[in-house]
Length: 188
Image (tube, rainbow, N blue to C red):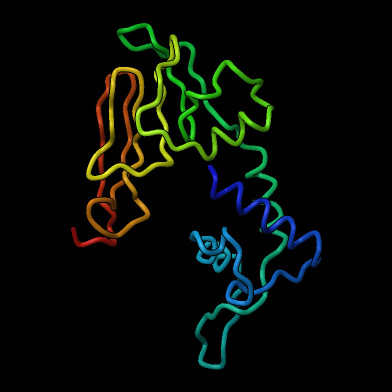
């Protein structure tokens, strides 16, 4: 998704320009850090045992693991297409981060406009793509997923700890069964 792309761009730049010295999260603000990246970056801090025998985070990053994870993120596909999985209307399943409606079939999948749209597009009610049932997220829906005859936006803001968001949603296709779990850190 777009947050992973921001992470790749921000940390690859820092690693390539600074070597192994990645600035500590509170020393520099980038768009990824301001959008949850600070917590992710914190998880890469190395640990040591202090004089009381407690494990504490250091101000040094595990850059080997960070580089490996960045390479893994770069290897991920932008979409999953299941041609053999069809609903009762003959639509096969397409799973993307954001709605593909503006670019699907119009641009090659390695085209930058295609990539940007798949990662960043925010359309509440995308147009129909012939023969495809589109499942995506990126634009949090309040209280429940938006499920229509040709698409489902299943992003219900699991990262948020407040109503009307704070839920993780999944869709079983082609049965069209919705599963929802509220954020376990939330007291909704």
